[in-house]
Image (cartoon, rainbow, N blue to C red; front, side, top):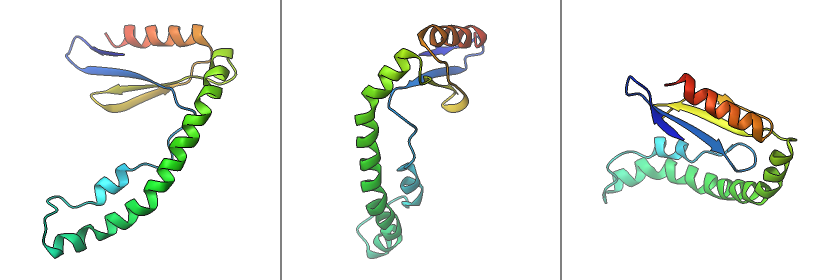
Length: 120
């Protein structure tokens, strides 16, 4: 859910649907890769550490993603029953501001409407 408040600030409320939190983040490799990778050997040498880290992290990330994907139906049922809380993340201008964990559909709707009304 996205909206702008009266000051023109963009707010985003995201509901995380996959089971669990993401542990392995590929953004780390993005920070290691130097800009302007050309065809010269120097830029290859500079990018070599990033390629090594990517070669290690990519299989771990794929394994984690598959596990989270397979567990998502179980998490959806547990969230619908009220045994596991939903995960909501509030962002302001693309930066995380708050995280909420309502239990049950009724509380999820209440938290969503409260957050939206507070930020108007």
